[in-house]
Amino acid sequence: MSSYAEKNLISGESIVLKAKINFLAIIRQIIWAVIMIVVAVVLGSNEALNAEGVEPIKTIVVAVCLVIGLMPLLIDILGLVCTSFAVTNKRVIGKTGVLKIETLDLHIDKVDTVTIKAPFWGRILRYYYVEVRGSGSSKPVTFKYISNAPQLKNSITEAIEQHAAEARKAQAAEIAMAMNRGRM
Image (cartoon, rainbow, N blue to C red):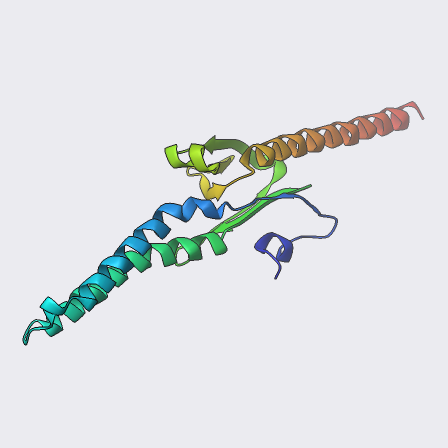
């Protein structure tokens, strides 16, 4: 299965580095889901709650416990699976979100800032939030649960420097050609 970045490459473009998603980031939701499943099982198997008239309420409470436990876990798993972020030799490409999808397709010379944030649990479980802001953009696009964020930031910086060096060389060649034409 190819990622969003691989599907959106243009000619002459190659992926320098892909983001690695850290699935340990959802450990809290997994623990919460397990706790709520245990509560649902205990409530469901409690014989004292099998009295007449209480059975429908017990069923509703068990169902609510399961939904409260599993819904955040499923949302986060979908969010992780639907996140794609990569640095190419020409652009920074990414997509995040399930229902509200945010995409990033930013030419390398238009990258304004790349910010790495590590929340408390991120420092422990080694994941980061990466915010990329393009020039002229008021709001950054944030990619969550990235484990190789420092390498991504370095790759973006190197791609920017390489692009600037290539632009300087092209400009110098143009100036040299113009000067040679002026001498003739």
